[in-house]
Amino acid sequence: MTIVYSRCSTEDQASNGISIDSQVRICTDEAKRLGCNNIKIIKDEGKSAGNMDRPGLKEIMRLCEEKKVKRIIMLSGDRLSRKMENHLFLRGFFKKHGVEVHYTSQANIDINTAMGIMMDNTFANMSEFQRLQTSDKTKACLTQKVKEGWFPGVAPLGYRNVDNPNYRKGEISKRIIIPDDDTAPLVQDMFDLYATGDYSVYTLAEEMARRGLKSRKGKMLHPSKVYETLRNPLYIGELHWGGIVIKKAKHTPIIRTSLFEMVNRTIAAHNHNCCRKRKYQFLLRGFAFCGVCGRRLTAEWHSKASGIKFGYYHCPKREGCSNAYNQVGEMENQVKEQFKNIQFSQSFVNLIVKKAKKILDEKRRQITAKRKLYQNKRNSLEIKRSNAEDKLLKGVLNDNDFTRIRENIREELGAVEYQLDAIEEQRETKIDEIQEILRFSRNIYDAYDKANYILKRHYLSLFWERFDIKDKKIIKAIPTRLFQTLLENKQVIITGKWGD
Ligand SMILES: [Zn+2]
Image (cartoon, rainbow, N blue to C red; front, top):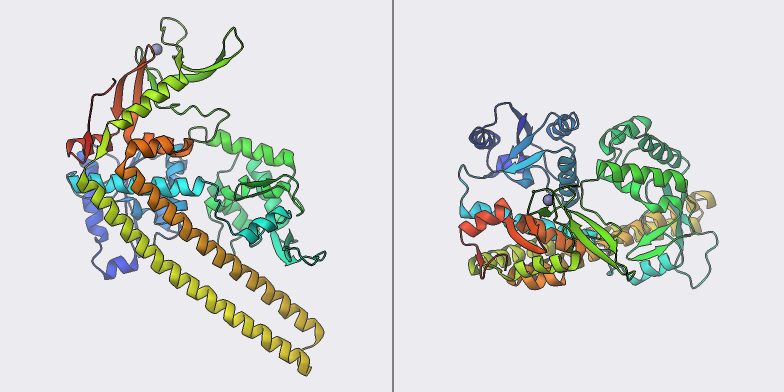
């Protein structure tokens, strides 16, 4: 079936956002234009996209898991999610279930729409990239704490923060994490259940909620949180932080390594379509096709007589297709050269700059407000602490109560400090992201050339559907529909010839 999804928040309803009925009308028209017959309309009225706690969205996910959905049509990506992590989670989710997500904004695709989509894709890609990058901007003290072998932040699921009983002067790790008696067994259950292969992160979140494992706010765990937890090697006693890896951290592991590995093999099996790190990262995997018979090329290592190994893309057809030995480096170079010929129009670059500025301004406002909030929180906690100390001296508070209160305040203060650091890190990340976007819009080739594997794959997927390869040459480069539209509208300019 085809789902038409519409959502509006309470603010949308109040302001001049497109009403839910208009959304349905526009998307239904689009569905008909695309020739869809079995159309189901799903609405989330008065719901924000800041989280995924929406009945409509849940229904969509259920239908997808039941393999009943072919396509989802909505106005734009922000109908589904305004939060990058959710956006990414959903993107992976739909991809996994073979669901096509179709955006529309006007009945006819006009320049603005295509440009809008391109920009959103670009920004989404950058955000994702920034998230995937291990951050080297982490505060020095957190890094130091990690080097001492301790997890530096608010305790992850199944653990709690306590004072370090073996704290020595000069060390940073005053606060440490220990397994939490209530939640650690539930986290163990979660791994056990997932390892059976009978659960998705979504159904597992529901099951765990039934068993009493919930978010801090007492709600069902977000599926992306479940995913994050299952993949977190912290549970087997490792520490991964800002590029630092400590195999034997000081906290107590609560998951057996064998179970953890089994769970992560299950995740990998569920996600086999997604782009992820491989042993050797063949850049064109998935993009390269046989120019003779049309099959998707596979990439492999071959050893030459000299013992030196070479990577090749070759046609998997056993008999009758001679298309082999397209050397990896050579093919990837040819693809890189394709980017030399692509250039955004000046008006497009201007638009990107304008949007980047808007995003940055907005982010600055948000961060200032957030920082203020936590600074106030810190002040009030410090006042609370002083009051408790005064009461202890006056004998109003007994020793036990004072210890308990101090413990609580310290924990809260620790959390506040951590939040303040996290805010700073967010700001830095955003600036990196904007910088990357500007570099990309001004010189695509240069940006592609300097990008790492993950980002290169993103750039490729923005522009190219596939490359047909024959006899060590790209004989045809097929652009994405989006890129095609931009070309037609001259928002992207091709300078030079293809395939040369
Ligand atoms: Zn072939």
